Image (cartoon, rainbow, N blue to C red; front, side, top):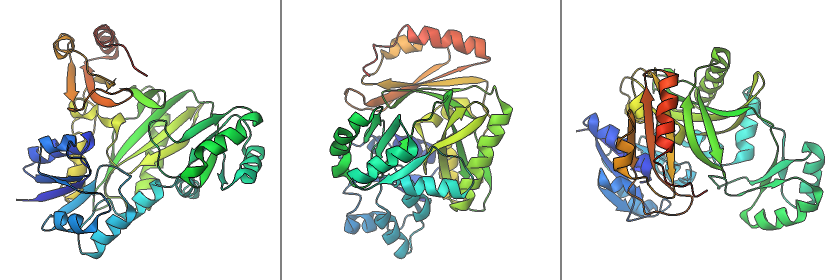
Length: 367
């Protein structure tokens, strides 16, 4: 039987594992936490993601390896490749996505617009960057940080010193100009080992407190969708990426400005489990194992709602037609993603009504 080994055992790994098992593929995981969600669907090796001894043993006899998180050390992937393992995606997408400045430089080189930005190595360079980029702006760590962590909005020059002091210990920084966007969107693509690229419909995302709250497939602007597909196709091809990749973008009038990309399955694509002909998870498994890709069209109107902090009452969710609750088996904690709900409907008006009914049974938001 074919075996897929996955570095990381969070909810993304769990959903990858469910899709792999549905394809009759054995799956196993390596994660630092013995409480990793993915242990519900396959054997778990508990080890650090940079501990090469256990990792090489974990990889032995696997047909392919993949990762569910871009925080996996690039050195780990390189060591696996050097040992003759098949790792998809490889090192280039991972390394590029791990450094915000490198990432933006790559996007610019591909002709994909990004926000004005400048490197920050010390306080004087931050002051110069503010002069170049202007205010308001966002000071970010170049590496690490997610769901709004590792970044501070600068609105006045009086805030410069405190912001730098707060983030300086994290290493080199980058200052990004504030983008006055109309909405946030993402486009998800999958690229096979043979170079075939397929994309899912453009999704509108709602964030609050730096955390994704809702995603909805709107389909209201074919020109923007075509432009997003052009951008993400160019990116996955240039990176020689095999698997799923997500490009997050800002809509500014009739333009798209790239924010960042993730070389993996993505929260804004969870709707594809119930709402698309083939989910992002199934197509990622197919791509990394060199199996044929499935169709990606959506099935009616669809949205996804994240459960932040704590789950709603499952019985209450079940009263909403078209709603499906996915429980990540995580302990409640403020600002933690503990599950998501997909809502499907035959048309946008019915979807609106079902989302309103869901809102009525959701617990208070913690963020």
